Length: 178
Image (cartoon, rainbow, N blue to C red):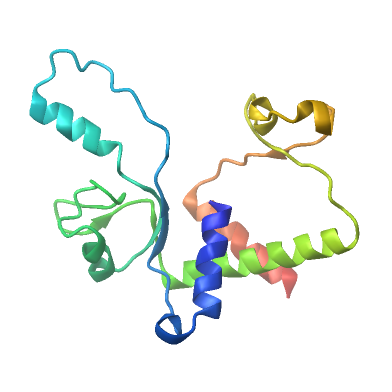
């Protein structure tokens, strides 16, 4: 998701011509892996098609603007974007962010890039693989024999937090940076 965020940041900051004054509509990704549907043997064709369609619903963060969202998926049925309507007709999704929240994310990415540039210019290029629970990115790496990283060294640990806590943490980070 970091790479998609960086691409979005660059488009919004450096857009020229038709991309000048660009406002983010969202950043989405679709998992590339092919998933196997369970329980499909006696499933009616219509239900099977609906289950297959669910595999194409993307993940990510979208601008909380109904007009923009309807331009992406007119009926907001969660077929392609992770947004639906409540019975009252309100938008329902944990994947929505205001323009101000996108601004907080932009600030975080700016600080992160500056920190990475300082580290690299200072010669710090150590490996810090990602770890979530007992799963580590090293588990899938074909280059362990080359890097010879000791598994007792630190990892970038996954931090599970709520959406609210995430944006509160970004706000604190921005205040500490001032």
